[in-house]
Image (cartoon, rainbow, N blue to C red):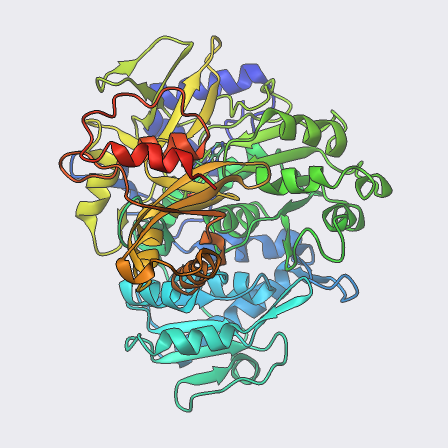
Length: 635
Ligand code: WTA
């Protein structure tokens, strides 16, 4: 029996049991048989969650791009690796073969080298969903530079703080990007950000929209002329298993975003193995994940996981609504997509449009449907199952995180019976635990608790860039000897998991994680604002939307509230990005606080949810009178 490709439920249970009984042996067999190593490991795993220190495949050497590109050249050099579908449906799709990808990555890597980038340097990538984004990522990996992709919807302030946090030497960007009918001036945003970043010595600019841009001499270079001069061969840098591969920032409940650090060997093994099984990938398939490479889903399941399996991976530049809401289905039909992986928020937005667009297209190529990023509600699940998969393509509701690197709880399609809203069973090698209020593990079924993982898996983030203490505090301090996910979950009578949502101050809006603290900090910068608190409230399409309670200073009294609302959202857009804008803003005379001065978000959350029947004991508050005031003036 092959542990690598699970096809039946019995096989899943067997493989799973083995992965728990002897994790080292289990991962060793997978690593041994399916990857290209320059040197084998001395030790499969050493770990200590109390430090925390986690090492997989210590002593091994490899380069991830040799695994994702070079090793496919003999068997499938002329197969499409990246299938690029542009924003404008009239622009031709591009098929980049493995041979071509190899050349492009080598050339790009040589440009990086020419500009002085060496192993271990950090390179920030701020690009739209064009092939150069995937190529830039792989070019960094080719030479051992650590890529830090920043989603190209973040503002210049957010970009600058990420560049500075990891002291990037270079930024790779484009003149601009297309989004439906709009264009966005990415180079302008980078220029603005770089006023604050003295660490950046070089900017490489991809031309995409042919706009007029300002090039700073000695710092900014157009990519194309550099590529034209670069050799097509670039020897892969041989990396140690635990060398950093990339940094990816994610929001925390407090303060600065966290630069999660992923390392090379474990990440490769885990993303490749999960990709193969969770999508039941087969050689002739055309796989499409609609995420942006600016998020972990794009890193693991547009770039590394698919390419490690020699797959054809679709990259889509545009948006689901352009030129109309049939665009996704048009792409599925046109490229005969076999696996389609998207977010619940996109499903809800498409479902709202009815079936007229969808019915025009032939979706019969679809074999597996995936969802990720937030809990999927039952209605959206059924709509997806009935209308997109026509009940023939199983839905894989995949639960995981930036921190976990790969999919952790998921059905295996055609093996695990699905159940709406349930991510179902742990992937082999993953050992979840539910923890009760007293911090104890609950062993029985039909319970809910805080979701932890009690044993290491190969693709877990190893640290937070520059702040190991925060890594320990955030993930390994809540419960002894366990990784704490920040999510709540319930387990049904057969052991299926359903993720119920965040139990901390992270709010997931349209699948994007947003920490409340950075948004509040942004709002508080408005000269008329005294203080603010953000909570989430249910939203039909976005899953959650943001509700802000804002108290004004004297200076703000008498000012027009609608104007203030616009100004507040403008500041948020500038400091973080449009994704963090508030849907509702209520001006209040005060915020409910405990006697020690802590804002009682629980009460604010209930009010925003319009669930005020049981607010709990408010008599211990410092200022109980504001609660009535807030309840009577909701927006
Ligand atoms: C949430 C995305 C329910 C969860 C890969 C997690 C989910 C956070 C699911 C991580 C799912 C992700 N069902 N909730 N299938 N997948 N989440 O870091 O709260 O962007 O902690 O990684 O998204 O978001 P991140």
